[in-house]
Amino acid sequence: NDTLTTSTEHLHIIVREDVWMIKKASDVTVGDKLINSSNTEILVETIESISGNFRVFDLNVESNDTYIANNIVTHNAKDGPGVDPESP
View (tube, one colour):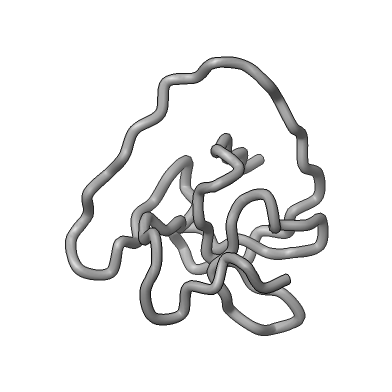
């Protein structure tokens, strides 16, 4: 069971209807797929919203801003090529 806890503004690499895209966590929906470190698609089956104060980290990773968090490939870019966090 791969679980990822994230802020609503964090960007993630997802597959939706066979199209790869980068979306804010708040725009990820049940049925989207995340990618794990073995390049296997992980179906988003549930989304749970939690409130509170949490410790977060702003990672600075080289060149492509992609890294692994809890075995799930995620993204750290704020903007740039391929990033369209406003589109549905």
